[in-house]
Length: 145
Image (cartoon, rainbow, N blue to C red; front, side, top):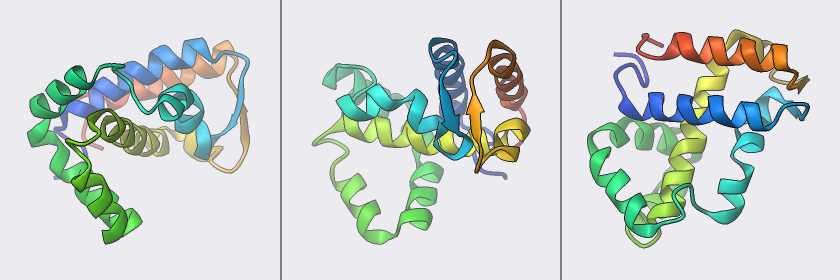
């Protein structure tokens, strides 16, 4: 099975990215930083839900989908980083959720041909580029990646 192939979190992140793209029209970002640009406020605030309880419920509801994402984070960043994330799941569930969203968003953008082609280039989020990226994200929903 391919990474995130049947992962319910993937579609949640795609929906959030599509909404954020609209909010960031006329913004410039490198393809490799696009997820961080769109989720900048979440990263700064350390939360997506702005509710500890909601983040805990999200973790519980997505528990079965988190394994492969955590394995990827461990592979990419090493055991020490991974241990910090896992040990802090319940200490700071909102931060944990942000980390998961950023990991998934980065991966999804690497699967969009337009973003991937411009990974090391600046992308201006024009309405045409937003529409193209949104369509490419939409194709990823429910599709093997």
